[in-house]
Length: 333
Image (cartoon, rainbow, N blue to C red; front, side):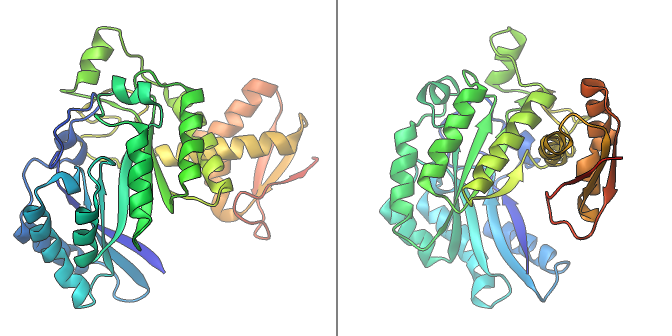
């Protein structure tokens, strides 16, 4: 059964902080506040195109700190979405919010109106990084929020970012370890992009902030994906959703590891490691599952070219439908 989200963006609603990286209206492409009528209109629009069978459909409130909105407004938006849960046309509601905007009263209300999944914007479990990013909360708030949410039947997602001010590869890996210790059901990983009209843009232009390169971000995220998966935690997204604003040619990205297929680049990195291990410094032929061929070869033959450049070795990659995802077989040529 395939899962579908009906995205409803509530840009910068409910959040009193201006994180250095944040301009939600540019990130989401949304410039207006959402009303219950907008919720119904969006759901109806998506339901007209989504399959009626073998589909798990959730309305998803993204883009802001949903539980920071006055509870009366939360209830109005949730009530509109809950109508579709009650009549069976959708299967639940998910939302994203801040870890310091979680309380028993809030969770009781979310449960009442059919919320099934809560995602917390953790970003980092390093307090220095959180402070430099002007997040307005500490890692201890994340731990407390998770402990409280786990008293309810909600599925829990945690979102982390890489490349924030004061961050490093070591700190990102430590954040991943701390997230794993909290045992969420799922995670998202977002490399930091420098967006127009943010404090981070000022920091980038005055030289006090250096963004990740595309290659460094992809390599780090590949390591993070494998770390989470080894802990049986599902990675549901790597990199921001590409939009007209957020893309290589978009007007909103000033700097940072932007790529319309960033998740694919991460898979390329994972396969690069698998292939290098299998080759053992030899020429030969690598076999992978046919559906994984593009990931193994790499974007614009990225892995083939890189292996030749770094090792001087020639490698062929061919399909073998007996192999599973990320299973690699080597044959000497």
